[in-house]
Picture 1 (spheres, rainbow, N blue to C red):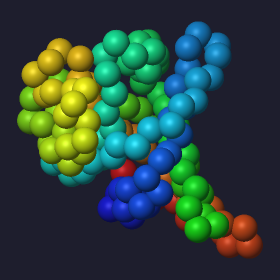
Picture 2 (picture 1 turned 135 degrees about the vertical axis):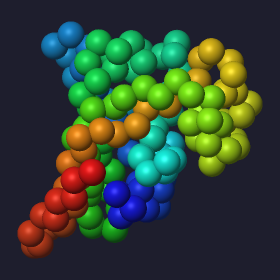
Picture 3 (picture 1 turned 120 degrees about the vertical axis):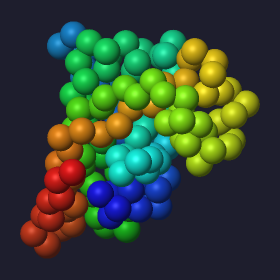
Picture 4 (picture 1 turned 30 degrees about the horizontal axis):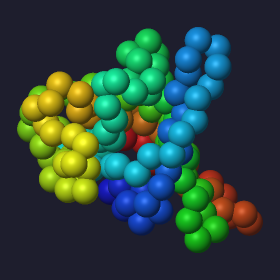
Length: 130
């Protein structure tokens, strides 16, 4: 899990895929935070991402850096605790202009049943589960 966290932080941008009905939806994200031994992402409750994950928590993340790409297939499980939200916002203080752990909009999700695959051309893929 640490390798996944480090890769996503170093890449700075990853793409999150969710499903809306039968239509895949992909958008750039930049938040990832380790809290209590789990990897978390953040979004706003008013965003389509939130509604899509409420209907179907299965998601996939993808990032590319230095000739290697990472795909993480997982379930994103909401953690509504103030402590989890505060940890995320403390890790990304630039978001505090838009979000607050007590605003009713900030949402954090942790990755469950995750399979991460690191792939580079010419090398065998490496898989990590957490």
